[in-house]
Length: 282
Image (tube, rainbow, N blue to C red; front, top):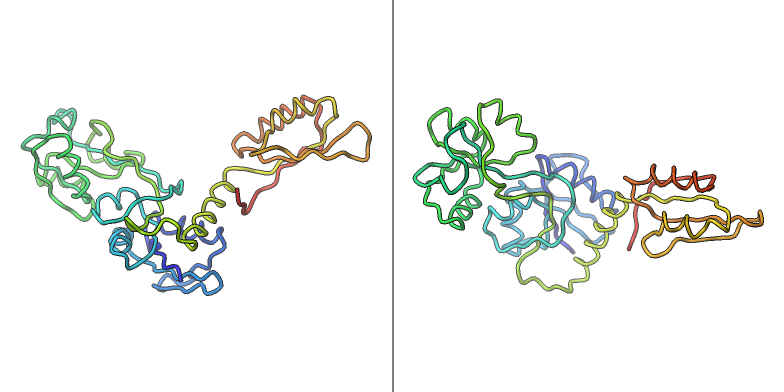
């Protein structure tokens, strides 16, 4: 049975469970559930603190897990990223009061407060900077006001919280993070259960990015039409009962669907329809 770690709370939790549900796996109905067995899919889910997931997976206690790239790298565990999941995107940045420093090269002798001490310590070392790191479990933006540190390092989404605290973002991003699937370093690469899980998750990612488009078009315009809707491999073209017309079916990027429909209509296509894709295998 494949043992999978899933975030039990925070910004990763609901999107991860929603994606797993779309991939055909059972998910918990009660937030107090810590373990859920999906016997039909031969999977056991463990709902854990996002920060602990990399530790459990890296130790080999669990086979794979869903967590943030920032949490994975901060943990220092023997786990590695094997798939990007496309949600919970964020940027890890330094911030301070205006005029304190312009970038990491000026941090020497200063103190940096963060909830990601492992990540920051490594970043400072990689840049040859000798600075102190203070670990805080949350609300690090108050550390400067209270005199604990001159600089903070934190996850930034919009930057509003930092600006409200009178701070400005400085330097280049330390890291760009998102939700990822992880597994232990050195784990067998050909595990069929892991491969099946990754195929399902990849199917959800593709299904979310594409829609199915159907339309009718005159035969003489087919080549120009299919150049607009090439599909992943090739569109399906079928003759219609009305002579001189064909029906075309193709997957198109969801974000481009409206523009493509307009261009097809101008080309003479009619009965243009788009439908959502709930699951797929590519």
